[in-house]
Image 1 (tube, rainbow, N blue to C red):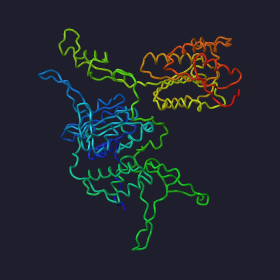
Image 2: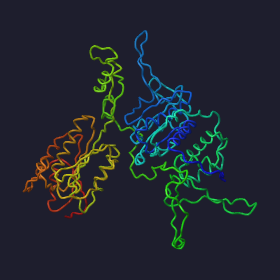
Image 3: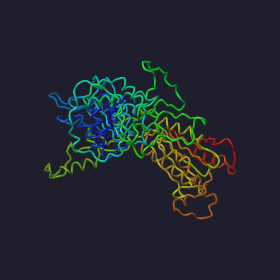
Image 4: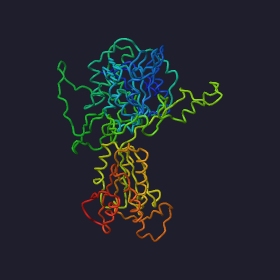
Length: 594
């Protein structure tokens, strides 16, 4: 039975967000809040609102801990401090920012969940919903019961498929807030959270949760919705969680709520019949967000000109736009073993490796960010009264670097040779190696019909084979010109730059060339943008000359393969290219057609 009171007016985005934060601050089981499609400029104000809710109207706001792609293990669990004693200097190991301390619970803020580092993902999986936190670091050993920390993460809906389910399941409160434009300042000062026991969850509330999510819903989602309903009932001062609280919780996170099915008619005094649960149906995945699989009806069951219930245009009253579980519809591939760091074979401090992605205050004199340090010092010269330009220790900043990949896959794709065969089978072993080894990918395309300049090759770099551009590059339409020599030259430049920049850190690299060897564009034409006829075999000879320079690279770490397109005539051209490259020939297709 549901209450007869009318539905409440839909909340605006800011009030809806503030209510979700209050529920998460009240119940530690709702510690993770995930926002989809939040504008980047609002991350600061939204996290400030969550910190103010955690601190309460009379206390200081919670400490915010930014986490990102460069977050490391040693930055989360422990921190070292240099202290001066009578007998000399000594290091003191203290708990890190994620470990509970006195005051409001800390708030971890993740601006982009899809690009969170492995250390940050592991911390979220370990902390969110945990009953005990055990920290064992050199010089530090702590055990906390029921960690109080809260997490606020932001992710785009189209990136939800890239995030591992182990991480997504930890966020109990999910909201899609594409319509949020501002956070009013009055929301920062709200009423205090109630003290006391939680409201009691009734059997009717549990049943209504299952009806809202539908059969086969994930147990974690059912628990999250029930706990959110319990938090709303507690905030309202109610002793029991009713059906209305469950519907209010569903509307809060963006689920569409429909009226429950009426019970079947029965005679007075007759007990309700117990029907067995419906059997699983084909197509049910077990992770539904409240949308059961559709059942096909036979021709006899379909009435002619059947009309369904009238539906209004736009969102239903009380419903919010945005699905809280966009990963159910995502088709993107997920990273292999996302919660494990790639094996590192090189030595040296991790802060001195990888691409610079930011700066922070220096903890030592290694990898100093010169520009940021000079800028910080210049700001304070007049205040300090310096007669000469001086840099103080507080001005020192060091670089934050993203981890550099240890493996590289370079693909050279000749689209003019892919006429009547699919090269995916020949490329699958190399793509699988790049996926499991978490290698970076560089794709060089020649002979595409949609190329910006058909006389030149095109290339791009990607972090992994999961980049959507890699799959799109495999199936570009076939063009006329084949600047194979320019593509081979560009592949050599990519490999030399990788070996030069990463040095011994680049453990292994693959160069895979898919071509029939028929390069009809000379290298001079690719450089100048002008084609001078006659061409004859100049394009083929330039390709072999460019391949000779690649053969001189470090073959202990570089492996080269040429995929033979098996085209006739001139079927010996791929073998001549492979011999010059010192490569292995891979059969591209079974048939040998022209």
